[in-house]
Length: 191
Image 1 (tube, rainbow, N blue to C red):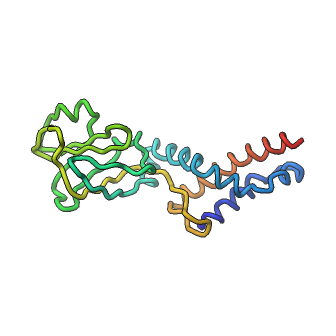
Image 2 (cartoon, rainbow, N blue to C red):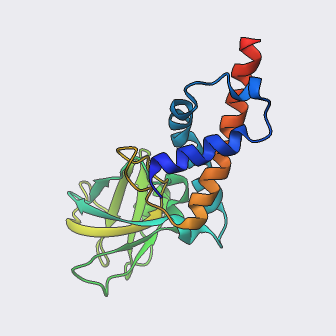
């Protein structure tokens, strides 16, 4: 579905059941829906990530390049759910990595596994298998992180929304509910 089609659907659903006076007060409902999209997407995706049965619907593969054992994550990654992620080295798929909280990351237990952690909110740090913690870290090269992510707002109105139909339906419903609140608030202010 194109982004503009999602916005139009949400606007139509939000105006359903409103009086003509209430529904007619918002000339720029599409602009309001466009503004609400990032917040609604965050809420819908966090709800999906919190459910072990729906989490897979928002999992994305992120290509990272480690420099001195670190890489910066993009803003769409739901960092709260990083413990549910999977890290692989595409050049050596036999390597195994496990997520650890930072205190366990620096104490480094079983060295057969590589470990990774999140530091400073958006910095992924990695220690290779059979390597101890050191400053600076020494892991380098490409890695792939599979992690829950927010559905990103498309660049243009005619670009398709990149998500599965189940999440698209949730976005439509949640955006209509959020938009309905804005329409009613705007109608009340105009009265």
